[in-house]
Length: 324
Ligand code: UT7
Image (cartoon, rainbow, N blue to C red):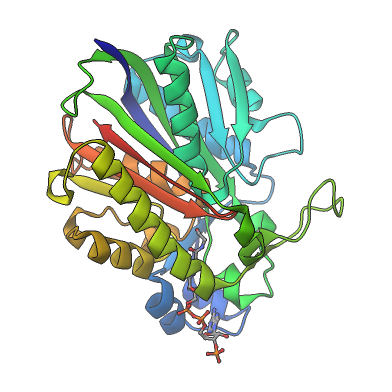
């Protein structure tokens, strides 16, 4: 028998304020038709003034703990994936720790932009498999609206705010793909593409937060290639075929990236969980938001095989295969 990290609860939170494409078209030179056709996005949620990433993270974490039937004191580890922390330091995860009443263990943030949730899940899985941690809270939370240049139509229409969380608990398995829990994770990065997707500020360089800059077309091209590759890697490592996967929960950057990846791998679109039209790209939050939605509405059922995949700035990319 080997240790397996099992997802025992999911939760998410979206800020109340809904912003449609039409509303953005009043501010920048764009149209609802362009945004829908090129990205699939119809609306996004944006945090209210004064509402910060930890507020979103705490709300999602509280719901995930409720779904798991656990109190905060049962959590040994919090990993919060975010590109938009409340402060440069301390880690936003420690604010979540305080809010949920967790007085032991440890909490930290990780930064892998849109791949952040898959990275965080992989790190937590390794802590659980090593026996160091029994229960982990893995969160993706973003207020990406705070690092957008609202005069730049090529980026401002694409992103939204939100948070999602899962509770992982140590279980046992036989080391086979029938086991419940995380079966594998695969992570990659390639620093040579830094300039295709980055923020033009930071504490050490400009002493400002900066704004998102992106060569969209190039990022798009790399995304489909890298995502197809890292999904293929997960299937091969587990001796599985596309038809063995019940659901794919992709990072929600662009409907056409999701369609392109599905086509390349032979996944039918009705097995891809899609939220991009309603949430836009919420970076590290997009996968746990989509996962929580599909678990909550009964599409994803216990025992099913779910593949998570993401790609983001760095470049970073990765996949996680989970039996729910
Ligand atoms: O989470 C991971 C990071 N992000 C991504 O994965 C995003 C990856 N990229 C994309 O999703 C797509 O490349 C975009 C949605 C960003 C853009 O779609 P595209 O089909 O690649 O369009 P494009 O960048 O090639 O732009 C086409 C045209 C350009 O005009 P010209 O040069 O053809 O005259 C742009 O200036 O569309 C113009 N354009 C816009 N027009 C109306 C760019 N943004 C807008 C806009 N409204 N918001």
